[in-house]
Image (cartoon, rainbow, N blue to C red):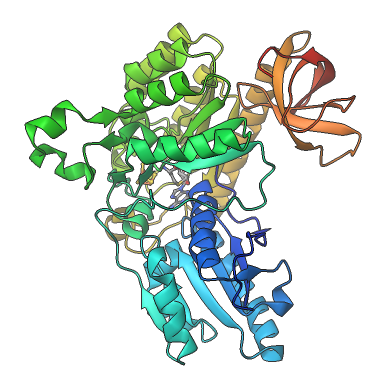
Length: 481
Ligand code: SAH
Ligand code: F3S
């Protein structure tokens, strides 16, 4: 997803609209991908209807929920450390209840209750609507677990409570689950089979965001290009759909076209694209609409055909290059970012060199790079030995990060002297005299505040850059305001 905020603590409290209030206070925090952050907004909505008020203060919470990530071992360790912290608080406030949501809940199920004695509640990603019942169970002194994965659930009928929102950009999830079965990946096991959300409910959610003056929307899914609405149900059951359902089905290109057409003033992004599922129609729709950002997150994982095969990525290096060439042909200034895993089982030095040479060809604007982390239950764990030494994984990772940094700088330097449209999102972390926002290519730009405000589209002349940021000066409003 754009993009894993993994392993970094993104502790956050809700500011729910107070309804009647049951006098109980909820503290929720999220780890992992954007889908988790988006799911926490769904959970917040469900619990606000139950009258929970929220707190940013862990010490005064009656209910603590942690939305967890299983993608790498380190992500799980981070959550376990957080549970230790909750435990310390629970010693002072024994009536406080602790619930684990998300991928770790799904992966570990009721085992969690034995492993982490402080946990009262374990709820998988498809079971959030059951939270009110589960909380009742916990109130009655019993542990509660629901980790049932669904064929239908998309939470399309729930209007998310926007947590810690800047009021400018929001996520809208369009698919859940993943059918791709990359051999290293735990997601198909924790989030279940792929299903898409009714386009009508997607448009309604965007209507609501537009009415609240949001300026940028990111359509979210583990594999957005695989979106397919044919009246509900799993993607893999599409073959069994009726002729009418097949004829009226909506794919990702159609959905994107519909949304872009209806909201010409809203900037649209989407993530994540899996190379094997991204079609030329999607690129054509992007090229057609000015409001679709010129940015594609297109994970490659490895530049070696042999490793791609072992990973069950269903495309070759050459097919990936063709896709990149098509993108650049139709949208010449389109930015592309990657995910790369180093040290997948059996990866040789030659495979690693293939990854570096692939990077050299694409010169990604940005990248998310990880050392392989074996995940229990995945195909790679069952079939392959995790045989690349940690030190080798780390060294290869460093080489890849160094290459990426050089490519990011190269891409950023191309903006020097140009004037680009930036949507102001927040104050710069480094200076309260500067705004921070992104251009269409998803590159962060920082510039002196002037009279502009959060949510403005401004034209910024770029004067300098680093490998992470563009630096410049605002020269006026863009015509998108
Ligand atoms: N399709 C998803 C991918 C989720 S995982 C999305 O929307 O982003 C995000 C990234 O984590 C993957 O692309 C991969 O590069 C990395 N990853 C997944 N499993 C991993 C593992 N076992 N070890 C290391 N990195 C992993
Ligand atoms: Fe994971 Fe591959 Fe799906 S990385 S989320 S199985 S596309």
